[in-house]
Length: 318
Image (cartoon, rainbow, N blue to C red):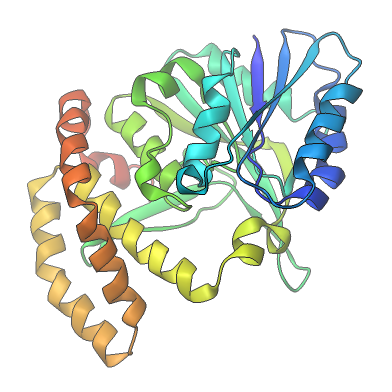
């Protein structure tokens, strides 16, 4: 089985210096197919390109190929778009997505790839050894969710079970053929957040499965990541609200859930007014601007669907 590891980068010079050798070391023992390490680079202003090219030129293993694809257009930047660029030049059967602030442990590949022997598996999530701001280690990687007050509420699930509502775009593996069929990450969510939940959800509605593998471990140093260091808290909040709206308007086709969404909107608007949470209003307005594009994709999702929204979420609530 050939694999393509995609590491999207934006101003991650120091993270790449630290983590690329660890990634190389973790995949160097894989002999069951070809390994591509692809580093798509958004318009970085640091020395990322030098680090990337230096890493690619240093590869000596004949089983490992290094690739990069560079974007210099700021208007076409963002996490989803950057990952999609990497996927467009990938030739592997499985795409493994790793954030630049992530490095895998040795032996993480075998348990991850074993799941793809089953044809209905779309994606497999890794156990995320998350290093928090205070140095605390929290184990993540399995997601659960439920529809609550008109929105999809998603949370960290217990890691002793294998089902998951979504597979993280920062530490997960995806079947390339299904990725291509679904169109990869929807760039409507750019610059970040919800694109991996969206894609996993679409796959499940189409009849595929997403699972969690606790034996495939990665270390994730969140506080050094791009979102934490490059964007303000207010900006992140606006985008988070916007993408919550986009997800519901784009994906939910159960009539009862759409009615509940509309029913709960006055409550959310009044609560935001009471809390002076102006980011909520901005997020709603930004989502409205995307409505024509959202409506264009709803019909294709509905045509592919073989499972209902309630069926998907009710199966993964613990």
